[in-house]
Amino acid sequence: MVRRTAALVLTVLGAGALAACGSDGGAATEPAAPVTAAQAEPDAATNEAPAARAAQSGTSVLATRLQVPWGVAFLPGGDALVSERTTGRILRVSPSGAKRVVQRIAGVEAVGEGGLLGLAVGRTYAKDRLVYAFYTSRRDNRIVRFKLGGPPRVVFSGIRSAPIHNGGRLAFGPDGKLYVGTGDAGDTSLSQDRRSPNGKVLRLNPDGSIPSSNPFRGSPVFSLGHRNVQGLAFDRAGRLWAPEFGQNTFDEVNLIRRGRNYGWPAVEGRGTGGGRYESPKVVWRTSESSPSGAAIVGSTLYVGALAGRRLWKVPLDGTSAGRPQALLDGRYGRVRSPAAAPDGSLWVTTSNRDGRGSPTPDDDRIVRLANP
Image (cartoon, rainbow, N blue to C red; front, side, top):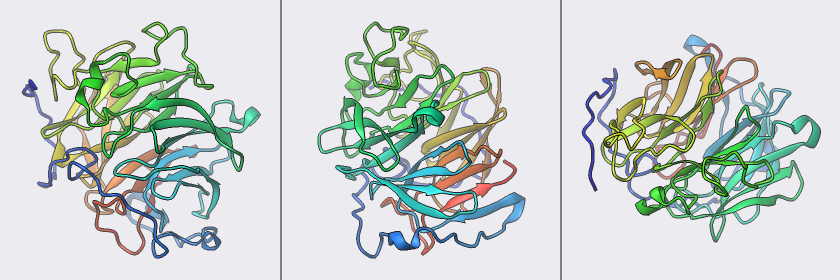
């Protein structure tokens, strides 16, 4: 595999030397984290809101004792739906921190990095009450939609699953289409194969069909050449930004453009391969980031860093990205998913019970930044 050397590597402050991420911010494969009686929080207790612990800069702990929270999607009233990767449960969490189980997805296979992953609330939720979820089944990764408490219906399937590189993020764009971040499932050849949905950003109609306006006729592929996309966020101008796990050297943030190729596995980090590939807007050393979720508040991109154990704050200016700043540095452990709340705050989930962290009795948590 040919690797490009970064011409300009962003120097980030306060970056400690951590283990390089082969995939999801740790060793090359993540051990399965089976649910046990000691780990699983009893349903009867899930409606009890923990006392939020006030912290500096408007930061507080909103909810505790979650089991590897992965996807976060807000409902119109301000509550959030939060998926637990290892349990197959979806919790409804209020701004007060109260939480309760509102959905269970049957058939979730939480092996390696797989399980119940991304969530999205449909743009027409007020009318049809539809919620979308990405999960790993026994056969593949798939997307289902459902009304809370109702049976899920598969709308898209056949995304190869593996112990690593499942991607899994969902986001609705301003065009009403469902965008999906996928991984290469450990097979780098899939990223450049337009016939495969793996190693791509996909664009679907809400019912799972393929939009006629996609760049490749009859294909769900919106962009290709990705290694493992676990974050998708749209800015105010409708541009799509996506962090991406590197292999041994550089993690990335990419500006996703229709029909473009982002170079994996031929390239890692900055460069265009002689004009064939899109170059990332931000790069980090893998020990500083291992970027998972992404959210945009105003003109600022926030990226969760697993191995980096921090939240990256990246200023955006049109199609350019500025120098990242580290927030929550080492304070809450592995940071998985930032999510922009309707009230302007930022909710951030930790991922310390994923087999790679060092959980405290309160993990996993949702942290709220009142003034991001």
